[in-house]
Length: 324
Image 1 (cartoon, rainbow, N blue to C red):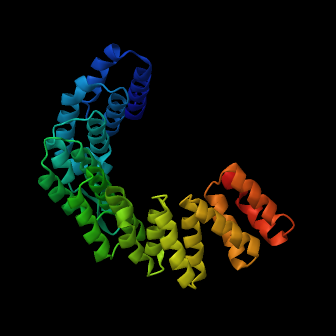
Image 2 (cartoon, rainbow, N blue to C red):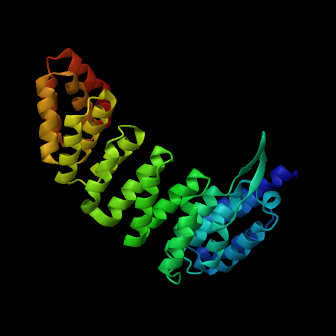
């Protein structure tokens, strides 16, 4: 049997364990976690997590530590370490040490034209896992996550923001505010900061987030959508106030979409009035309403408003897949 055939047989045997009792699966999974093949270990770790086999947590930790040594050779692309750390997180391990090792791990691997860090996802997984470790003092946790906010890998930065949001700490919110004010990052990362601040502070942070609408760029669009997620009348009011002042066609359409997503009755009526007015904004309003998955009553009113208007009927048909 070739090496490839042997691996395929081992993977098939692991897959069969999903159908067996936990008692019958423990021994083969324990053996699989000791294997050298990183893909095989990753598969075993995923099954352990799926079946919530907490008795195998020591084996998960041992395997994780093993793949941290000579990591580029033993575990290219961090397949094993990602699955092992995720399994420990799923099993709600309260031992922070593996996650602390993971959050600091950098793995440079050869790529065309140089070397690339493949451990960004691992650092993010471990950051999120650290939040659930009750033995880690908040001041230490925030320090670890602050380092990750400046990580070179976007995945790690994104997970650091999610982790800070999960702390629910106003100290974490201050860090997120600072990161947003610094700018200089992808729009989606800045948007994650806006959303996380709102998740921690609630609607009281809406006026602060609204300042980022002024740039009328992709980051401003992310701010608008973050505001919409609060589903509050205040969010609608701030978005409409900005819509009244801007003349940029693209940003106006973004603001209409955000207003629709607030799911406020005032927003719905405003958008329906735009459709009724049959202007250039009418097309954008139809699209915004349909993308927000309106209630059947709203959809019926919208259908009646566009009836007989070929231009608006076309927009309705083009976007009707959102409500099917």
